[in-house]
Image (cartoon, rainbow, N blue to C red; front, side, top):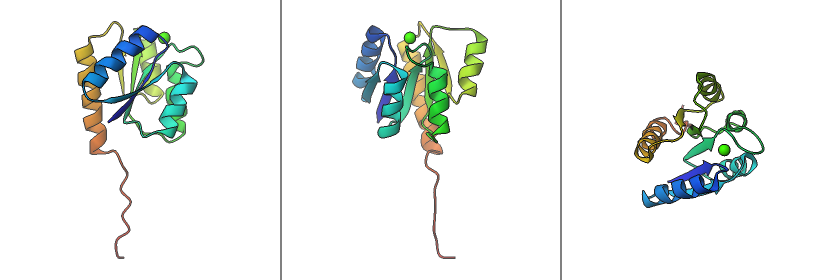
Length: 132
Ligand code: CA
């Protein structure tokens, strides 16, 4: 299972990636929205963890772009901002969940597992061409 972390804070990104790798995930790391968009578009990413405050574009804009491109992967927004307006904007942009920093790693991991379980249930649209 391949996860993507889009986060410009290198320390946080690295420690989170290490933790998720230890939990058995393959993890790609992106330092800005452009790199994140590249990974999410070119590779089979099961879930993206996206920081809101990125150097080139906001995580909200990145989520909007991915949804506009037809990407259905679960997106978990990670941010220091805890205003309800930011949460609403993130969720309206197509994010599936929202975790405010500083976060508990066990809670984050539980939310990731929950999103993956949910997306496994209705992940691929099934196109069946049976005999008519
Ligand atoms: Ca940031």
